[in-house]
Every structure is written in C-alpha cells, then in structure tokens.
Amino acid sequence: MLTIAVSKGRIYEEALPLLEEAGIRPVDDPKTSRKLILQTTRDDVQLVIIRATDVPTFVEYGAADMGIAGKDVLLEHGAESLYEPLDLNIATCRLMTAAHKDAPDISRRVRVATKYVKTAKKYFAELGIQADIIKLYGSMELAPLVGLADCIVDLVDTGNTLKANGLEPRDLIMNISSRLVVNKAAMKMKHQAIQSLLDQFEKTLAKR
Ligand code: PRT
Ligand code: MG
Image: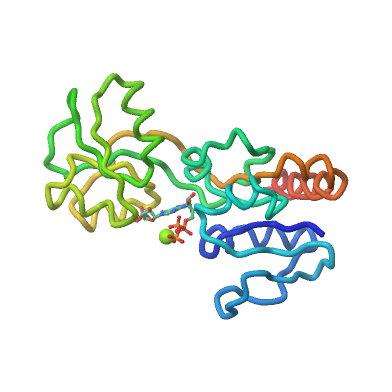
C-alpha cells in the first residue's frame, strides 16, 4: 500500500488531474466527506487529507510514503529529511515582501510580520538588514495597517489580497510551486511502486 499525503484546497484541486493520469481517483470528495483517509480507484494507493503545513511531518515520519507540499512549507519545515524528486509546478505563487503603499523603502532595521519565520530571517540576514520577526498564523496583511510591523512576508498570487488592504508587493523572495516529497526509507523499501508513480507524473508533466 502507498499512502500519499495531500492538503485540502488548492493543492488537492490541482493535484487531482495528475493523480488521475496515474489511475488514482479518490472514491470520496474531501469537500463533502469528513473522512481523513480516502480510498482510491487503485487498490494499492490511498490518500490522507491533512493541513498543508503538516504534510512534511507525516512524510518525514513515514506516516505517509509520499506527499505534495508547497515549497514555502518545505523551506520552513527544513526538508533535509525528505527526498524532493519532482517539481509538480502546481499551486504556483510568489513569496514576497509587502508593505503599505505609502511606506518608505526598507532600511537597515525592519519589523516583519510573517508565518515564514525561518525563511524571512534568512532572507533579511543575507541582505544585511536587521529584522525583528513577529510570528503570525494568518491575516498578515493586517499587521502594517495597525502598526504591528513595517512589512510582511507572505505568498502573493493575483495581488488582490494586498491591494484590498492598501498594501503593495515589494521584493520577490522566491517563486513557489508544489513539490512531490518522498520518505527516505519508503524510497528504498517500496522503490518499484514509488518509481513507477514518479515516472508516470513526470510523463504527464512533460506533456504540459
Ligand atoms: O488553509 P490552511 O490553514 O489549512 O493552510 P494553508 O493556508 O497553508 O493552505 P492553502 O491550501 O491555502 O495553501 C496551500 C499551499 O498553496 C501554500 O503552502 C502555497 O504553496 C500554495 N499557494 C499558492 C498559496 C497561494 N497560491 C496563495 N495565494 N497559498 C496561499 N495563498 C494565499 C496567500 O497567503 C494570501 O493570503 O492567498 C492570498 C493571496 O492571494 P492573492 O491572489 O490575493 O494574491
Ligand atoms: Mg489557507
């Protein structure tokens, strides 16, 4: 049995066509079902539906053999403990700094609100900017509006969320997409099954 960890929402929606090309179609729909383990049209494959940020943890400990996670999440988790063999090029967006549209450029010291603490720390350190990082779990856009921070580090897709809150994107930190990650022991123990899935995904991606 192969267990694949996926998060509900955009990653799931964009992963479905890829899975389907490999003959994997979930029997239940996570939007309407409360099941956390989804059987599929392949007897040897099941999906576990978890929070996006939990995917690397499940795969690292072997609770799932493989998973699909955003590069943003993998960077924060520290992905040395996982194989990352494939860029699926889905759920793409940009990790950026953003600030109030009237705010001055970032100088030598800055207060940053983000849920990407590790990534933000590294980014500002490399620029030689002293950053005081404030960890938030959501609604980052609010922080500059109420004086909690000078800027934020967050994901940007259309830019509409920033714009609706009077903020603007500033600097690109990294282009983000979702990656296939594989548990290291599973890669050895279930090599054939995993390799054939990887080949199948690769074939589908090459056609896009
Ligand atoms: O929702 P939950 O708390 O369970 O977890 P999550 O928010 O991490 O999950 P989800 O499904 O929202 O995101 C999962 C992954 O999708 C992320 O880890 C990214 O790799 C990827 N992704 C791609 C995005 C976006 N695009 C995105 N636009 N994740 C979040 N956003 C948010 C962003 O944080 C901001 O609030 O959308 C807003 C910006 O969108 P625009 O279009 O207004 O710019
Ligand atoms: Mg979300």
